[in-house]
Length: 253
Image 1 (cartoon, rainbow, N blue to C red):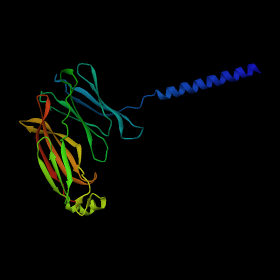
Image 2: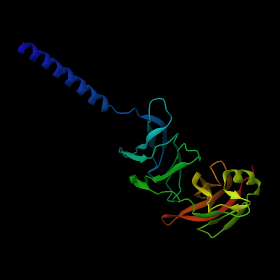
Image 3: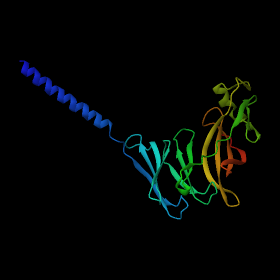
Image 4: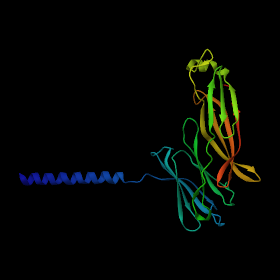
């Protein structure tokens, strides 16, 4: 009887061990990596083309969202470089000399997939085989508020420019939401100023590339668009300089 119990216990022990080992083996499997793009561009300044791969790890099989995104660069010196980015959808790369050192930089856009149509942006250089994060401009800072009489105002902090908005065409909507009562604002409420929705390269002056960004100003909710705010930037002396900013009213809905 003892012998039978020992055999049964031994068999159970090995079965459990096998199952446990299999579980750990399953956990250790790496997620599949996909190659989004492959391009050959001289980004080091040595006159030879480097190979730039954009790679990502899908959130799960069959989904477009990449939980991990990174650049893998096989440079002409035989070394491989990696630049990690945040997750998102359909990353795209462009190669322009944005810091004006006669070497193309790597500008990356990664849509986040949110309701505001936002993206994350990155700018890196590999000149002389040194990875340097050049960063991108910070979005404009804006102070804003709804005002009595179905109006609103906004002020760009960096420039001091002020703008007023007549929102009387939205009276019924704002009354229904409880934002106003008899034309009076129920409580102090700010407008919704989003980060960059787009950020694109543009020739700013004397053939030098810079960036132009667009930020949406919304009212009571994301679909309540009031204006677009555009800003133009130029990289000078190791930092981004604001060249121009303006607010463009959207058509009333």
